[in-house]
Image (cartoon, rainbow, N blue to C red):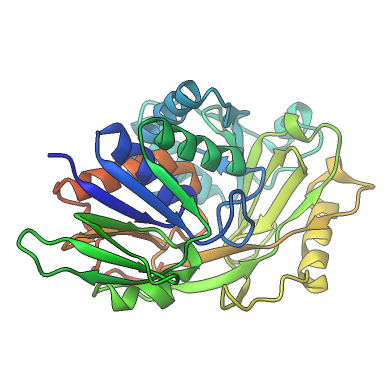
Length: 370
């Protein structure tokens, strides 16, 4: 049965859902509050890490599902978005060992390296205690990925409308469900189903639409870029805390068109996405500069260029991907969801079509804080 589906939010997750739904023949309308390529949310920029290595095997399985879907998107859109450079995890030995075990169980290759072997292979990177190299990793170009997903959706008939802010979602009460989506221009669109993927605006918007939403923190994170000429040759890397260096959440890095990007995971200040000061925090920049001086000899002599982005984090750092009535929710991607984008689009399309979701990502779940 062909469904009329409204997708509220045209960032990565909304775009991925629109692409999957339109590919299955549904009539899709995407309503995005801001203009194309905007920098107000969590989906903009030149780089996000792609990796298979997770301590939780279900995330490795989801990344394995996403990998061929990224490649299929490149074929559909004619736009390259994913570059595999490999990745280096290093730091606390038991954290690295766990990743090696999960990758081995998934049948993916990985190689243990000493800090000396890391320095020999990547002179710009200093490893802590023990390291694991895995080749099926690298970077996704964020802006190009969103653009390619919306392009692919449009090629399958989806209507993509920018500059449209949704103010309300009403259940129609008709037999079989259905919704009315109301915009700030008092336009009312009727649909059989709606997908809500509004990023940092989810905690303020979704409680009026669904029940069982876990608490979510919206924070402004401040990574930096070091503009070195060989940035695109760097692997992505994660420094796990607890050995020679210790910062809660750890540090991530990767090469990009803007330089070598590094950031601390989930340490930013809580913000309102509509009223945030995007002025860089000098103390945050200084922390990353000090880290680079000790652990990244390859960026010596360069000055970090700061940027800001939004994290929307659940207590357990698991996502919300679930359906309640005609409303499918995509939320709380906790600073690590981008790599899964096209696979999450498929999960969203499954939910819209009535297939069951995953307990790990359910509304109303009882989950411990990690």
